[in-house]
Length: 505
Image (cartoon, rainbow, N blue to C red):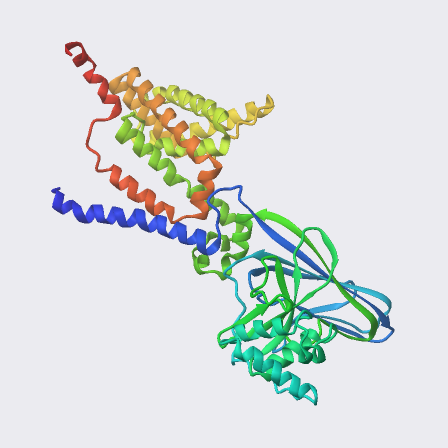
């Protein structure tokens, strides 16, 4: 193959390696699948507690709950309310938790719990129609004062957000203007601010959020101002005019109406508790895989039994890579091309030391029995079939004897492929007859050495994690193996042939 005809081959290898790495990076960024097994992600558990006194009749309680809060994603939602019916209701007014009961009397407590994870890319859904400023009517002398204050703010601003910031500054107590003193008071300040912005043609509303602090109880909702800037809702601190929500503020209510609407009870109170938890990042990614970009390529959707099977199958390419490297580059001779991979898989199931002992015992006894079968001059098919049956008896005997002595060798028919063992014994016996015991020892020890190396790689937790959670990395492994197949140089074990040349240096 000339260099020109090899170009498509090398290009295909390049595409395989790059595609595998690119898809793995995309899965990490899109689904949040971690590169290592020990990554942890912080999660906030927020609990809303509703207390009230039921009057003895039917009860209907509606609690406003978050829906797509900016900067956070909802992982789970649940309610704890014995004896009550519960539903999550979505309508034009947002999302609400609804409790119902035919008859209740006395002190009642309802709980709503939700888990939130920080996500800078999470944004609330855009409204179907652009919000419109509400019509606001004023009586004198407020009407004149409002228009004058709005005129001052308008002269100092050019955008809806700058208009809101200037209006907040003008309404602060430190500005001892006659008009602001007439309008603003501590009790109606935020409501006044929203009405004035709507009067100026800027859609505005009041929202409420929670300041997330670890292990805090009985926390209240804090009000914030939001304005529509023709593209999205912008949040502002109504006291400092600072734009945007602080990092640890979870927006709880963003629609009009009360946080709690109660029918059939009195003296209602809503309080919030929160706790910061950490969960494995992989568990979080598995929970979110179904609804994200590359989720359809995920193995998490399969039944648990099939996931376990694929978890074992997907580490086989790593063993194949080790065998290819050992044979092509290092030059270690083995019995069969990929027999060491199968032995390594068995070691993964049985553990290394018991697997080594059992393998050596089975093969040794099999060679003795094979020498007897050769004296009977049987046909190859009959000889292999007989070997399979004998290997099964040997394996069962080793397992029974080991169990009686308190050793769990783990050698079962499922783990060590009987046909492969029988063929290994057959190959070694033929090799013994043709090449002698020395060649059998070399290839046998080489097979075990490569199998142990493959086992050490395949049994590593990181290897199992990457191959199962990033299956596209096998494209890169395929590219590397194909590239390795083009190697035609000296094997490392062959370099010892040049040792005599050192004497002439």
